[in-house]
Length: 302
Image 1 (tube, rainbow, N blue to C red):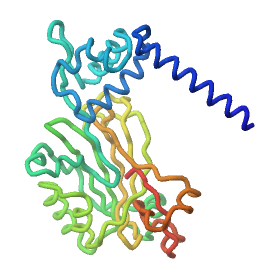
Image 2: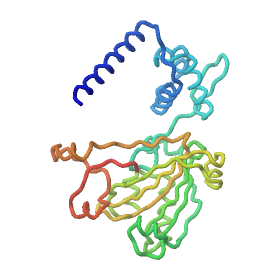
Image 3: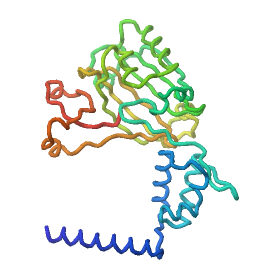
Image 4: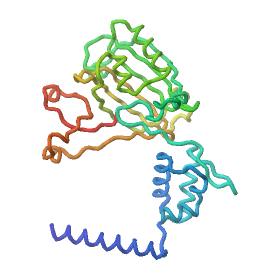
């Protein structure tokens, strides 16, 4: 087995060296519109393309090492998504960027800057008390018959970004909770501060599941997309620092406008051998074992 692995590594090394020599000699450009699309989309998300010259086909062929046809196809794909505009003699220009939402957060970080928050609009669609279901009781770890539900549409620069439906255990005064949410929505703080304002407890982390799903008709109307368009659906259970579930929400993000970023921890065995001081708990005290004191470090999408 060791000999086979060594031979495989040597073959990969030789192939990589051959590809590098061919590229440096100018004899070969890779043919892959997918790779060009991936790198260009990531560059848009990072804000790398400030001027039209940076998206010129000649420039991209040289910087990416990918054929002109592949670059052209990738730019056309981005234009179809509404991210760039292409026109004869004017080239390609950025039409709009991609919003990056980090783990444990509801909004892009740049919106918390002094003036950027004015780009955001949050519309309350529904505020009510609804009966619980088995799923709501399991996720929120409650036996209550009712919970509070709030549905919101988030718009950035006038365009829909996401639709969020959140459920929280019934507070003593639901009307006050609704009023607090509306007041916060006028200028939302960072999520940790928002959480503490609403629940009077420190933020403890979240666990989430993200899926790509076809958008149903009502949500599509709110997001401004065609029914059946793929969107990102994120389910999150949020807890306070004691491990108590405080909020469960589902958010439909427009897949053409939003990227969800998250961290990846080392495998369990590697974490066990690492010094205790380097362990970072980013998820909640979710399980009974964790609440008993055996906290495990992990990074979840949230």
